[in-house]
Length: 115
Length: 113
Image (cartoon, rainbow over all chains, first blue to last red; front, side, top):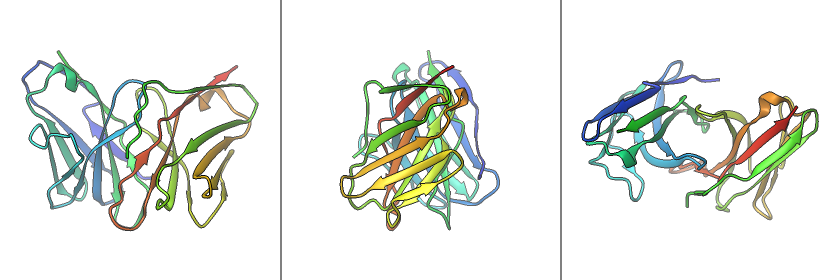
């Protein structure tokens, strides 16, 4: 199946700093990428949808100024958590979908811990 | 809307037995359904999908059944193995238009050796 990578896999940062997470589709062109957040023992919560070359569409309740998403190429999307706080600590997962398919392929996730 | 659970229901199955994981989906307009497996600390892994014009689809050791009348989806795993232990999510989407995937709350499968 299609491969999606995320970097870093784990990050620990201090409160007030910003953290950037990268999501790459390795063997296909991802016209659409999705960012999810998952708290322990819960389902995935969609944060935003990004299409290559256009602004991301954020879900209700997700602050676009806090969670900056850039999808500058067909193989890379980034999520930047700005001014991170301990409540932002979570498992962030991206997924990618090609132009021709319906299936989303997920990255391995990034564990963010804000101290 | 999106599903959020405070805790995951757990299904315990003896190794070698068949497992059946159920899911109720919410949107009658959804026409594409996917089962994902998520191991601890990892991203969801695609298992099998089914479109609304089918009611059954088989893969290797897995079968997905779709009942559109009652908006119910199930995943059957034959001869369950310890490596099947994970959280299983069903997901639904409408394949035309804005393709937002809605995840179910998830079921934790525990395989007893």
